[in-house]
Length: 439
Image (cartoon, rainbow, N blue to C red; front, side, top):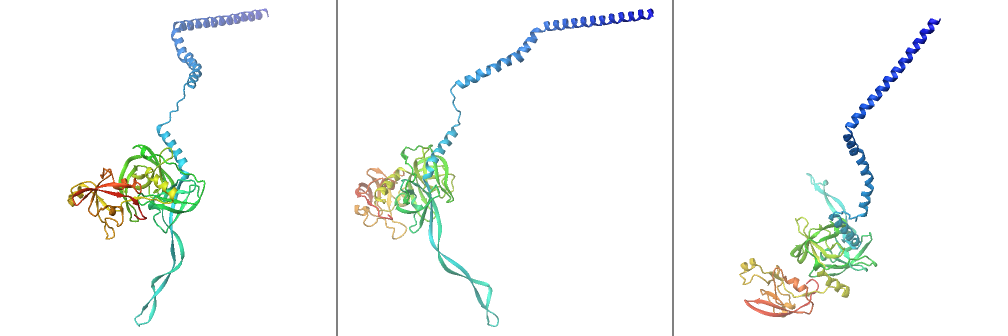
């Protein structure tokens, strides 16, 4: 028994010794590992600190400085970077918002008879001479069935006074027995009365019975510059009322001959050219500056072109508007002649001695006389084939048109005409009179 006890005691001592031995070995291993790691760390300490600084310490500093950076931006003056085009668009929107309520659409209609249509069978004779109906041969029979309103065309205009005066083109309201319906921007409709049609400019003044209407202000069209932005508003194609188009002033003081679908032809002098789209139906609508003020009245387009439109300068119309407001009609000075411009080609063709001025000449028909009887021209002694060279010392050239000079004069004013009559130059005094309707 004692022998077994001694064996167990020896085993215990051996076991304790092994545990102590393992502990010591592990402890020494840990110490050696720490020593080696410390040595490696100490050897590469510079690189380790640099890595930590670049990847952690620096990022932490930027993160802390970000609020300071943001605060500095907030303290700096804030200048919005709005593109120049955006400024332009905003200005156009403002101009349109201001002017649009005063732009109107004008519908031209007429009472025409309407008919009921029936068909009458025609009779034929057969081979035996008998009359029988031919089911394939009929004749339409039209029976009157009252009157109906038929739309003939449309145009545009704009309100110039709170009591319903409206400016449009003469060719929009040139049918004397037509019905003119004005459609306001708010949807209301009025029947308009034509107060006056200008015999010189393509302008007419109409009126509706309404009050407290929005109306447009006029700008000084003499101050327009080529390249200046403009806005056109009108009843495009007669279908899309208050259509807006934008562009620039493409040219000034243009002169041209204009014709319409009804066969009329007129000469337009010193008009504004613009690339703002002016479509059929825009006639009579306003051409606006970016303040929403009227600078012109849209009057014509160049057929077959891309956005070449023309507008009457509003300054040339202001006197007409003032006359209608004061007297209810338009009075224009007139001379009473028909003429053609003298050019180099006409000089060669007719063997003339000058290549400027106007040649007093009759029209295509016998009634189109060169000098109207009883007119200021006849009273001054002007006759057919005379050449008018100048008026008050101003030579009649392509830049100084006869009609544009006369239309700026006053009724009753006496002008000095230098003329070439039968090869002899002389000066005659012409006292302007008021043009009658149709002259």
